[in-house]
Image 1 (spheres, rainbow, N blue to C red):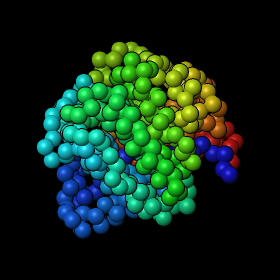
Image 2: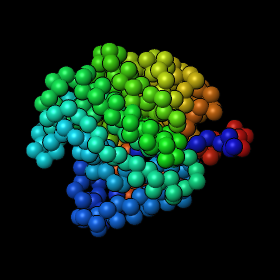
Image 3: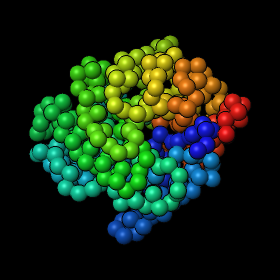
Image 4: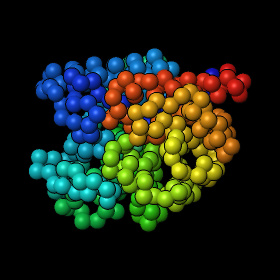
Length: 343
Ligand SMILES: [Zn+2]
């Protein structure tokens, strides 16, 4: 097996303009019914093709079938009213119209398993599939039933575990749970956040990952980051807990971030997905800039545990910018692999 440094996207890629309005979160679909279903499948093929042609080695679906990484999953569950939505403040930063929990939450059918089968058929290489994490799910809805963030998180963790096991069974190599909420609610992360995440990943036959970031490159997040000070020490609360957990991989934000790189040391032995692509700027990184971030990470992690990744999803980027960033990511990892004599 190749020892060269692997690369992956954290999750989303931009959607084609014929599928959804570009550069927008929660963009409405441009089609309906069977035409929409077909268009989503076509878009996934393009997203996979873009990654393969760019030289990315762990392939995702680019979340082409989802309007949003959290609400699309929740919309498929029982006990949730997704017609009469309510406005909530997401991670204390921006308002969004979200589904409402009105009864016990249940997974009446698979949510993404058909998508995962399609993705599996599109490449022989390793594939990663993303799911929202329990804490981020409860932060992206209105709860009118459980009235307890912890109880609802446990309920979601059980549902996520059923889904994750089905994804592994159809050949997914890595199931990643997205938990940006871990960077905000530290007491809850300590009390039940990591435990519910582990429940979601329990007895998985494939690898498990968690993605913790500072959010999409949207204005509310960029403003929030500007107020976080000279050093971003949020991961310091979370990494020691993850180090003791059964989660195999941790995806974090490094490019143009003020996260002290030495925090990676706390994750020694885990796979570290080093964010080497900034999602907050359209400026495309050079391969050298990507290699520099990965090289710095190598001071605190063994090379076989390092992967090049994006800081977060690229859904809000113009497509040509996102594709150029994918190429830079792969080229930067290649540059460093060659420098280190890996083959
Ligand atoms: Zn993210």
